[in-house]
Image 1 (cartoon, helix red, strand yellow):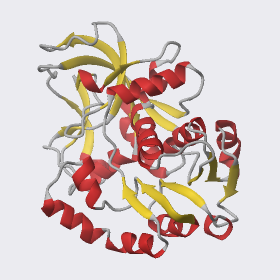
Image 2: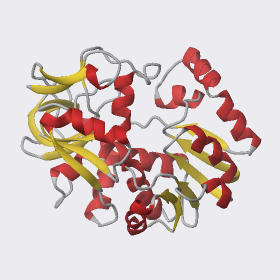
Image 3: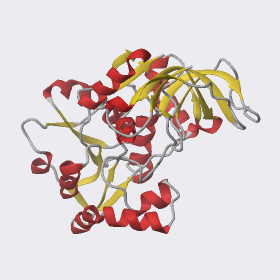
Length: 333
C-alpha cells in the first residue's frame, strides 16, 4: 500500500511516499480502508523530533494522527463495528499511521461518522475536537457564564474550541486577523481582537481560563489576563509534571524532567495565582461519539480550509506549516 513515511527526524525532506506492507488487525483492532486524513501541527513537530521526550516512534514510521475510513476487516474480539461502516478516529499515542491507504485502529478509539457528514470533513474532527473538549470541559470545567480566551480562533484547533466553549455556555474571546474575523464570529466568538493592530494583554483581564494554542510569548502573556484561581491550559507550551503523570503514564524521572523544563512557566503562573496545565490529549472513541452527536445536532461544524490529494501530502504539510490555514487541512485518499 502507499503511505507517507518519515525515515528520520528533520525537515520536509525526511518524509515521502513509500510502498509499505498492509497492516493486519490484532485482537480488539479494526482494519480501515482510509478515505481521508487530517493534518495537524503535531505531525510536523513529530517529524522534526520536537516531541521525542514525550513519544518516540520506531523509524521508518507512517505519519498521520487522525482519519476517516470504512471498516475493512475485524481482528479477534473486535465486535463493536461491522465491515462497511463509516468510522473516524484519533490514532493511538504510541503509533501513527493515518497517512496511508489502510490503517489499523483499536476499536475503543473509533466512533461512527455522523449521518450527513462527508468523509473529508470527518477526518478533520478527531484530534482538534477531542483536544478542545478535554481542555475546556475536563480540565478547565467551563460552564454557563464562564469567560474564556482562545487565541488564534480561526485555526484548525481554534475553530473547534470556539464552538465547544460556546456549547458549554462560556463567553468566548479570540484573536483573528481581518481575514479571519467573519469565520470566528460565525462560529460564535463573542469578542474578536484584531491581533494585527492590538495586543490581547493590553485589553483583556479577568478571564476564567485561557486555552493556549500558540505557546511562546503569547502563552507567557496569557497568565496576566486570567483572574486569580483561573487556569491556563496549553497545547503549545512546555509539559509539566502532570503531563507525565496523567497524560503519558510516566514515572518520577520524567515528572522531574518536566518539572525542570516548565519551571519558568509555573513560576509565572504562581505569580498571578493561576494554574498551568500542558495537555497531551488522549484518544477516546466514547468522547468522539459525543462530538459526533454535537455535529448531528448542528452544534459543531468542522471547518475545512483546503483538501489535497494524497499524492500531494508533502505540499499539504508545507501549507499547514505556513500558518495560513483557516480551519483544517485534509488529505483525500
